[in-house]
Image (cartoon, rainbow, N blue to C red; front, top):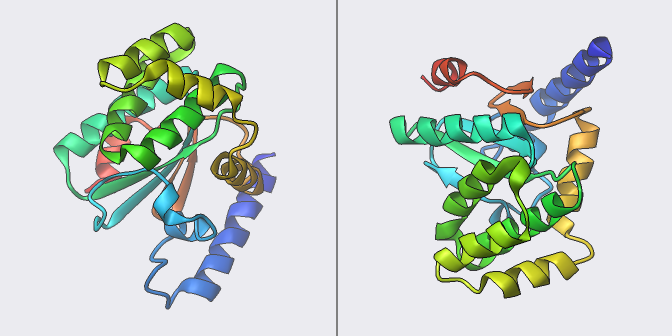
Length: 199
């Protein structure tokens, strides 16, 4: 499996290098792999002009994703040389899907609140449920129950569908998974490693 994964990454890098090496809009693999997404619809935090781009696949009920979120939050407080593009990938289904839709709707309607909502959802982790989601949204002066109900009734979300296709094309098998500039890191990335990559 590891050999197959390495071959896939090699093929992606060859495609990226040969096709986009001279394109201003795609400076690294992280930007290249989301080229088919509408960039305005993807949650982005940090310095948009940073030299380091991090693309993260995550699920709000994933324990290691919660740990990664804490490290990313700390990273953005300590450096302005990184931006993070969040790809909601609710692989655990159920309440994870509803939370992902809510977060994307927050990004669309109140982008300044996304990072806070994202991190608070991550803190809830495996205990995330309707009541604490609604209470959290209410605490931000939003109509928590209405937002939850609308997201829960939503059948399909184009962004999540695209994220799922992208994760499958990359051969990802779980969360978290991060693409940092030109490298893919399946699993949790230690904070010390993140600092080294950003600096």
